[in-house]
Image (cartoon, rainbow, N blue to C red; front, side, top):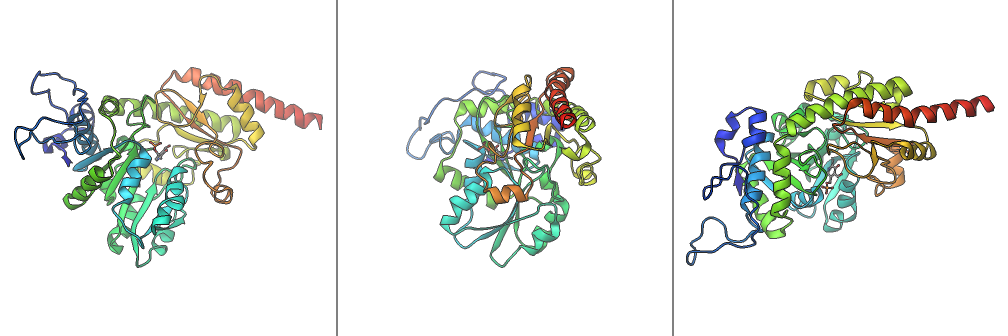
Length: 400
Ligand SMILES: Cc1ncc(COP(=O)(O)O)c(C=O)c1O
């Protein structure tokens, strides 16, 4: 299993981002971690090897990434996977039939799909609760509960969980706390400091940051748990290739810089949309109108670039999406380029209609992933798309 280099944990965040887990290549001095394109390793004799036997279990490029992200999260061991969902699926293999989980009701749509349509067939049980209520989370714990599983802010409703409060509940009730930190990243939020046992990511998103691969990564800080994670990683084998690992490693070097830019643009875009449409329509933890703005300020050091907006109907959403030029209509988020999506028919289409509606994922909801382009170009793009819609709505009202 891949353990951080302890000395990396003494460095500041930006230094960790650039250097953690990476040392000049011992054979050539290459500064950048080589892409070790190999499936196997020569052995000197029976039972004698250089620490590497077969690349499903270990690959040096992947190890550098695992050490890097483990250091960024402030954990001790990292485990990289071939996708965010592959990562979560491997985490869930820590458990067995009969185990129960308390989950945030509004997570990325693929998460409840994995739980309800696959893992429930293997005897795992899930209860979904409002992640804003620590009380509801605690009340849902039963004798068989093994973990609380959540995402904060949630995708796409931007609801927050009080990590310190839920971390205290998890510790007191003897259950694990598993946190998807994809949206906030370790730049803005550190779940381990609030008692999390496993922090995981879709590294497809901000960690990679350039929309050119799919991956996942989990971090823990307990040796026994790390050993079980490594056993599952090798036994189940949902590992990333070395080039994808290298792409994420290249991405994390600039994570702090990119997140600062996403955050600066995110705040401006959210303010602009709120001024144009009214604050009640714009869901962004950085706006004082967000009902959990105080919690956001307390547990996050930035708010990032994810913003959801309620535009009223699927037809209005479709027209706005067609007019946007700099924001591209696409699934995914967290890349340097600005994207926009329609959760009800895209990222959250697999969530049953009733649950979607009960958590506010309406047909009129659109979600922005604000990139790092020039802010003026982003605001002009939004003006062009929304102002003509607002004008059309006003003339329709006048004509009635
Ligand atoms: C918050 C969050 N977690 C997990 C995932 C799943 O990750 P992947 O698409 O890399 O499998 C996603 C994907 O959008 C996500 O947004």
